[in-house]
Image 1 (cartoon, rainbow, N blue to C red):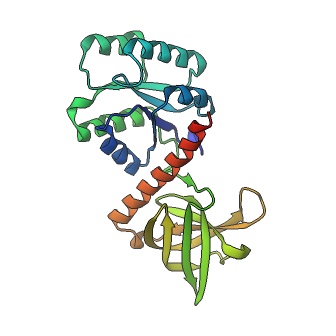
Image 2 (image 1 turned 30 degrees about the vertical axis):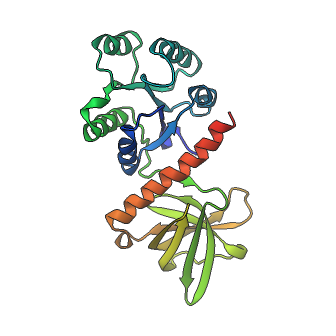
Length: 254
């Protein structure tokens, strides 16, 4: 998982149901979003993601007074982490405290205004805080067994495991240590990730060693013509789900 200049991790802490649609919208806009329902474990992990952003739901998890203590301690322990507030409570006093006294960097957002407007405000806040970094696409590192690919290269069937995925392309490790020449066009590839299937085409643009430095990995960019809007959005949702599953494991071990 990459951060800093390559993008910031955005955590919604105790997200209310109304934020479910909002998070999907943000994921489709190539923000790296996560859900967390354990503030204590997140605090123990957040030092590993020093440039992350936390949107804390004041209405859940802790009392409002305890959230104040939590934010103060977070500021002391991880000063580079950005903090924003989300709440259903349109209280002028709370708004003034968090914006003026606590000086949260990422806003005080009232959720009653609806999913579309909330997503718009959050997106603008994230843009202002350079949450995307320099990258255009969120990448998901695929653990063994997460994703598979079937393709055909001049009549030969290729079976491979996904090592990386984004809405722009993927990296695959071909079964048996095989490889495909750079420049090869692979049409009608079937990728299967967490039970979801997708038909795509692409071109092999590079080869590199895997993280262990041993087995070859082929990097494939998807052909834009093979992805309609529905398929591209499905890819972005899958990237979000794979990243969330990986983060759940990190938080569980904290």
